[in-house]
Image (cartoon, rainbow, N blue to C red; front, side):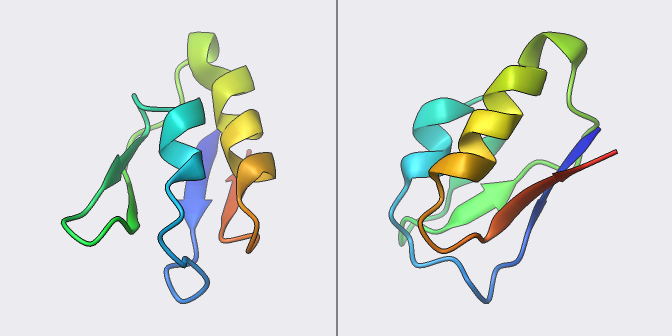
Length: 63
């Protein structure tokens, strides 16, 4: 499973990072930066919650 970001949709709300701080960092302007790693089994629920929390649907879980 991977968490993917469509950076053109990100508006910098930061809600994603609240749900999955191990998978998402925020840049200096508050925009999401998704770590390019497979989602660990222990963080799958966090990844799903992260994607669902994005008001602009900039994140999605695949795999």
